[in-house]
Length: 270
Image (cartoon, rainbow, N blue to C red; front, top):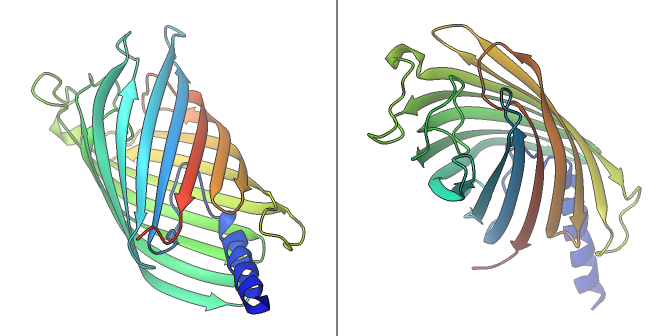
């Protein structure tokens, strides 16, 4: 029995070390635990820059940890932007962790990822967003460094926008379909100071700098997103964030808004 409790405690310590790199707007190079299935509910409220109308986006998501190197996400897009609630599309995301250096209280990891999204809503901005706005695909790399209770992650990716079906073509021209997306995310585990029980609540504070540049025009947006994150029982997660624009040269119809995320994970699910 003592060996069992020691094993559970070690698992909790490992999960605690991982929590400060569970970023909200980007994925770290680390994967979720193998043979794990997770469910997310992402709720986003955005304010239109011109009309001040409030738009609600609901993005339910399922995540599967296939192995320590592979994971998959599938996400649906639901929005009231067209003045009624509509199902607007879905996406598939996959990540492969190909490099890892693990040390005591520290690790460095590199991963490659790809995403494909299909959307049927109207195209209303030059910025490309595969989370509920544009059809298209994305390919990129992410590097994450964890040291004690701090985590730093950087991401760079290429995005290509497709038409949102025949009814909503990409109206800005073929040469404006490509963008470079990039981010820097930092997170710190604030509580608990010492992990001694399975049911201790984790508190993480995070800050994410998010940017995108259109390859043709050279126009760019830069956003900042502070995040407060709670982890309950090592399997329930709650994120609260407000994302706002620092520079909005690359046009978006709504650049500021709040996000609330709830997540539940089933470990050893298969």
